[in-house]
Length: 186
Length: 141
Ligand SMILES: Nc1nc2c(ncn2[C@@H]2O[C@H](COP(=O)(O)OP(=O)(O)OP(=O)(O)O)[C@@H](O)[C@H]2O)c(=O)[nH]1
Ligand SMILES: [Mg+2]
Image (cartoon, rainbow over all chains, first blue to last red; front, side, top):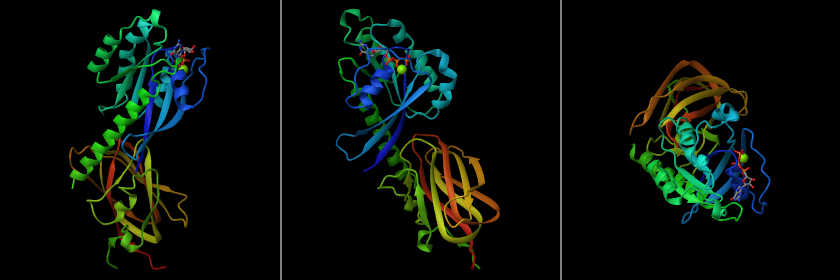
């Protein structure tokens, strides 16, 4: 039985629903906030996730980061040595999808060539009539960039655990692989 | 007096603090005298461990065998409790693909009751520490 700890950077454009996602996931029974409060800098939330078919778990330290460019310098310091990443966009906002490339690039610059499990999240799927980013494109883009993909509606509480379970499982797999390597050294 | 490895648990030394641990790869593996067994960190840096000698020792050389450690700081304390640490040495290690990092620190002889190892950053999400050796003599108090 082992409890791993992963620093998870949660990023993406402003108002795509990062804080809503993090809060609904971390605080069981939290209410969906209709009113938007912008995040300044970074807010830290913690949640432990168990890894299926093992007695292991992963403690995710979620760094819910501001989408507003304004805070980006301060954030780079707080983003040091990340373990996993979660990039969120709003399926009704094409610009927020296009900017994912920029967020990914910024994060990869922090990792010094290390492999980082990541997930791309398309949020606000409840706004059916207003959707502009097709699931197919987004998924393709995620594949090309080595990210997993999922869609959520924080408002409807749909699929909100999925991105974090994906990340926890990937991180756990990395640990298992690394331990194998450690064994093979001597 | 003959110089020996003072860190060995068989000589009474002990790891008294560790910031993370997998019960399969416990910190005792660092001081069991074997490089085959190891301690793993379980995510996020910095990570540290403290070795207690349970007495005052004089150390002239430190050796660590590990993997994927990037930046390491070693501190010492002469107190009865693991407090008041002072920096011994600090180093950025080389990346050694597929082979253990063996790092020797030849230092001016110093006294200590505790040694603290802080892994500040790494080349990967996790590192392993296989052995720590401290050559020197136990003081006759
Ligand atoms: N319809 C709908 N609205 C949502 C959903 N998720 C979040 N929102 C709304 O989107 C707005 C912005 O949400 P936040 O979570 O604050 O956005 P953010 O990404 O943290 O924004 P910054 O902190 O500025 O980076 C809020 O008004 C939320 O109520 C969703 O799934 N569906
Ligand atoms: Mg926010």
